[in-house]
Image (cartoon, rainbow, N blue to C red):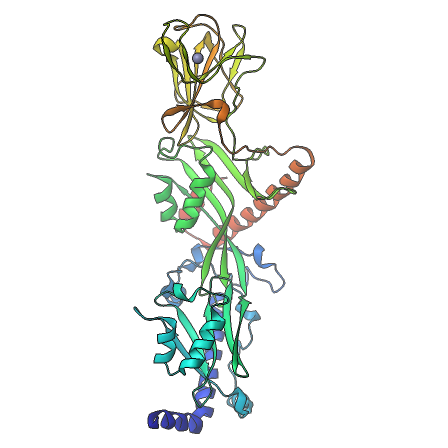
Length: 484
Ligand SMILES: [Zn+2]
């Protein structure tokens, strides 16, 4: 107790200097960070934050990385506009003195604490001098907004006490956007959630794939969460295990959320991404069509990236045999029919059930003339007994959904002309008629026009981003990679 009183006494005697120095340091830091972080060419006061385009490259000044290194966010773009914050100028000593802290009820002692290993919230508060029943009641109020049992080691708590040691408030950051604040009100504690200000910036990056998309993206400084998302959104179109070759390229334009103090970053949505595989571009734009439940990724023709495989890859055909066990028409014994048969006149066109790569287009024993298409990492479709192959259909060729890959025939072991169609999921045949694949939409008419507007906006922003990178970077490492 004696020590506490002594500290209090010293504090009271000297607080004017403590506060003066404190304000000076805060002011100086803000002023300095203002100089470091504000890039005049990129930020005008009224510019919409989301339009600020971050430039990855000009972050390489050691000052900036040092400033932010503790959160491993040295790649934060510099678009943080600190000039809007109060106190960009250091206070003069007169100003500091003019601030009064005399009123008793505003006099508080702030104490920052962190949960240590093996410590609960209660222990942490008690160890820092809170009264047991105060701590209990405060935790109770906190638990309205937060599962206090789940508190993590290292969690930061800002606590405040009156001069005589009464706990008056606790605040802790719940997640990126929310702060929980518990305050003493009379002899009770009340908790509330306060939304934290943040801003969204965008980042553009591109690279050439030497080994894998993952490594290439990582080399460009893309955070893991974004790389995973990049792979996910393309997984309907691309088989990342087999299709990616050295020299293929990626481009990505995505959002990051940055806390007002610039210290915390949360990765946001990918707005646009492009993969160039064997010289061919696949573009995806994020778009939230009116009347839909979720935003999705769309190709420039308005087709959602989530494409269903066609259950019937042939027009004007009659379903002549279902999937399941049946007596084999030629061999006589009962066996599993691992596909569905469509009866149609010889020469009827057969379509690729989905976008993909032709894995085989050649004679295949009892299947006769046979085509198998790999659509993505888990789905393949196979087409048998064809009289002929579609134009240009051979192993390794990329096909689009609906493209003609062959014609109905009666090659192989058959009793009559038909298409035997199989869908393979993760290496085994499944019933094509029971496919539970996401059914992708295709935007046409007015919804497509709305999507076009979104596409154009995104492209304009990307062009701005590229311009900034070109201006900021004098050696051509990046410009090389941004061939339009
Ligand atoms: Zn069959």
